[in-house]
Amino acid sequence: MTDSTFTFVTDRAGGTYLYQCHAQSLSEAVLSYIEHENARSGVPLDVDEDDLDPVQIQGMRAVWCRSCLDQCETLVLINIIRTQIEPHDTVGK
Image (cartoon, rainbow, N blue to C red; front, top):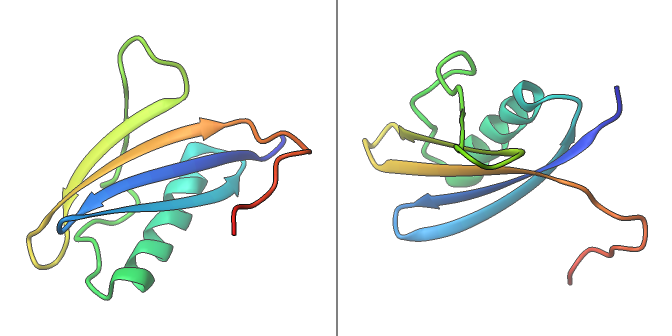
């Protein structure tokens, strides 16, 4: 199985945050996201990997959504998109 790129768009505490990772599965991407988000925010999400099961958006392919609370009980809305990155695409500066 080849890696896919997963893009996470998170609305949290009045801000919108983006994260991308390469993973072989949605579950692997979610684990990477939790680790990243907990380190970035300083306020860990109040979930573990078994508790953050995204729901596929009806009528969409490769798009999921999930909400949870962080440890300050702030609502966190997470949208996940599996994207195809082309070899000629560059990273923004």
